[in-house]
Amino acid sequence: MDYQYPMDLDWSTDEIVDVIKFFEAVEKAYESKIQKEAFMKAYRRFKAIVPGKADEKNYTDEFEAVSTYSAYQVIKKAKGLEDGDWVKMK
Image (cartoon, rainbow, N blue to C red):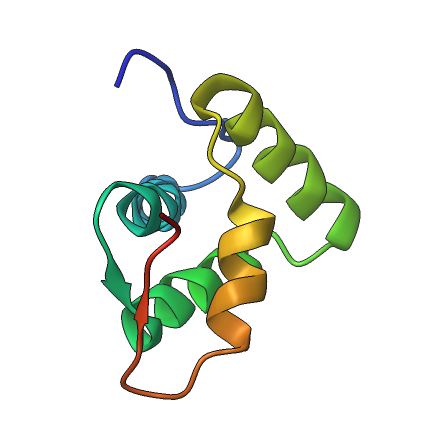
């Protein structure tokens, strides 16, 4: 990983850690696999920190620009899976 995660300097340390965990969950879906429940938990926490759709799109687009990993595609796939399934993008 040779990039920085997008973040807001107004976030608390805990919020920054949780946003990083969400982006790491997206990476995990592409690089190996992650359980749907674990991914959705990270996504729900991300949404608690970044509740606006426009802000969510800005942060996930910025992440995709530096990583090539689409959070949107992982979210879309995870929402279509059954509980207990694994999210795997490749």
